[in-house]
Length: 126
Figure 1 (cartoon, rainbow, N blue to C red):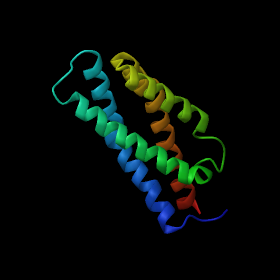
Figure 2 (cartoon, rainbow, N blue to C red):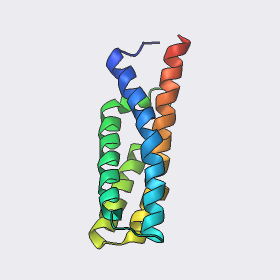
Figure 3 (tube, rainbow, N blue to C red):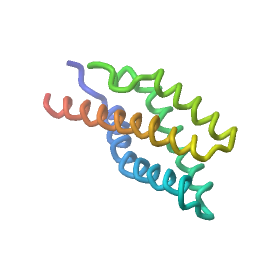
Figure 4 (tube, rainbow, N blue to C red):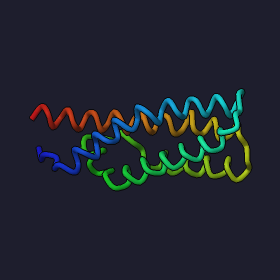
């Protein structure tokens, strides 16, 4: 089995660390969109979307590494989620945005995090 280089390790570690923050933040903004909108909800949503975009960009760059031992993250699912979110944003449909974040992006982020943990564990086991 080939070993990870230092940059690959750092990227995987960064995904795991970032997930600790973005996944709970998504839950907060989903709640705000549905029931408890605040003054800064739109700003929080924009920050979360930037974070999701960053994770998608990272995933696109390391997809081969992530899915090396099986499909941890389905790229077509991510593409569909992006389309759903775009439609919700264009329509200014807060329920559609909340549902997309909860049903599409949280599973993506959790799968990506687990795949990163798995690859690092494989590396440590060698």
